Length: 111
Length: 114
Image 1 (tube, rainbow over the protein chains, first blue to last red):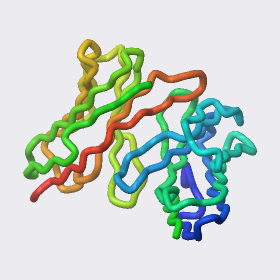
Image 2 (cartoon, rainbow over the protein chains, first blue to last red; image 1 turned 30 degrees about the horizontal axis):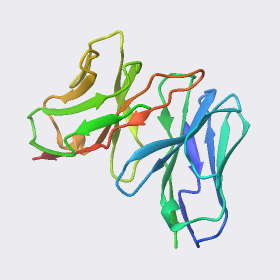
Image 3 (cartoon, each protein chain N blue to C red; image 1 turned 90 degrees about the vertical axis):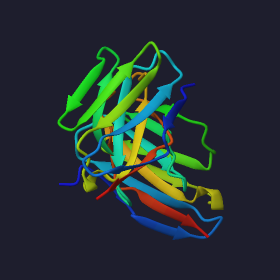
Image 4 (tube, rainbow over the protein chains, first blue to last red; image 1 turned 60 degrees about the vertical axis):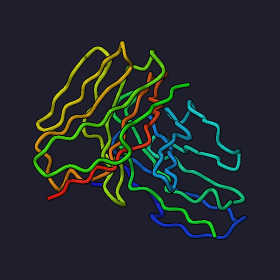
């Protein structure tokens, strides 16, 4: 029944490693997003895809690369992880410019 | 680009009293203003939203008002209950083809004291 799901829920890794976070939505939405929530709870958009096309690409290090294999999936790959990448990453989806529904979040800790 | 300021950063009210959280935005082209509630360790969840063609919207104990001229909008919660304790975020967006680029405020930690 989960509308927007993410895996894994927790991710602990060493600096310099490469990791991926996966997101899936079963709402039939055509737009998906990645947000980063830092330790001060500030939420900031990173990327958005509409029908597998990248349409929002904020000022994010190019170590972050989103990939959308289809409308229902949006994955986030992070290369050469740094301490400052530690945060909670939320996936969200919407029908075009409609309400955004968030996933449960992935807490990434870089040691 | 858009900038959203949210106040206060923390708010403590007695159960049954009202709570008001205010946000200002910078881009006059913004036309969509949602409010999200985030409980500890959980995802942000939409509680109410308003579009720029409407000045006020109400849903039971929650209401949002929008003043386009002053570029500010507010969340009003009446008859507060302990389960209203959470972090509340306002956001603003002017939309683009196929997506809403939400710019969030800094959040307000609301505590309801029994």
